[in-house]
Amino acid sequence: MKFFQVVLNGENFLIRVDGKKTLMGFFTTKFIEAESAKEAELKAVDALKQDEDLQNLTLNRGGDIYIAPTIHLDTIYEIRESSMEDDTGKSWYSMKGSDNDLE
Image (tube, rainbow, N blue to C red; front, side):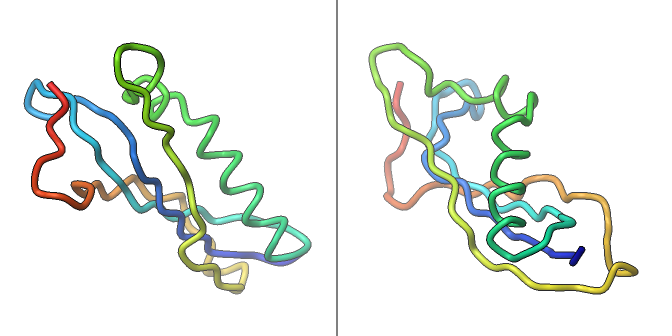
């Protein structure tokens, strides 16, 4: 098995910021053991999709506005096993555009 550091970029996540629904994006890093970089990417995306905290925070389901959130691979590195760490949290950013307030 090989070891990978996978950086993912989530976009179009509708979350509540200061009481208002706001489109946000984030970066997060996952540390994955896999046979290949492609398998590591798929495992990292699947782990993020199963993240209950993210599911509970995301407001994209139903309602008057539906914007599909997406997850993209940003970068992936093969690393040594000794470099494996706990997954990072999420670094949130406002999606491009001056007015992304949806309420």
